[in-house]
Amino acid sequence: MSESDARRKKLNQETARLPWHELQRHFAAGSVVWVSNELDLIEVALQFSFDNKTLVQSWLIQGQVAKASDAQAQNWLEHDALLWATVVPPFVLVQEHKPGEKTAH
Image (cartoon, rainbow, N blue to C red; front, side):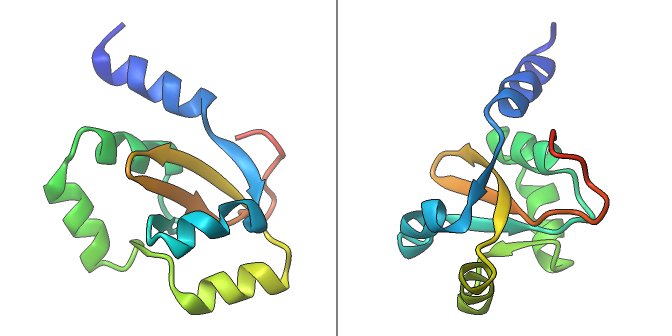
């Protein structure tokens, strides 16, 4: 198994749906990164873990990855949102529920 495959497997196993209230302290610390539903959360986490600056910068420019905003945090709080979340220190990457998505990621 390649290093990439091993990391992908580990990230997939460590990804969970968490209620926003459990992630708020990470938001307060400035470490929550929102990932667009257009992207695969595990792939984004993998690229963060490999410090792929070129690809991450591209996603940032395209608005597909960004630090979670106050407006997003407020919305997630008001709707008691469940978000997919995975950790790539020092970040917690989150993604909103995709329409039609099953409960397993």
